[in-house]
Image (cartoon, rainbow, N blue to C red):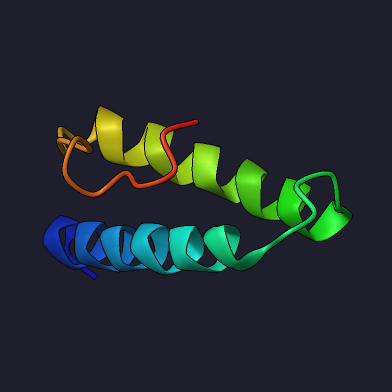
Length: 61
């Protein structure tokens, strides 16, 4: 898998995860906490890869 393909998959996962996070009512639930952990991981990966998250980061945590 090329770097470009990996970045595409990561951006898609980041976007999908944010949609799921916005649907969760209980922000203290274990499910939300697990999603937030993955959200932070993806945010670090994408930022380190030079992706500008300004337009695609809807959670902004």
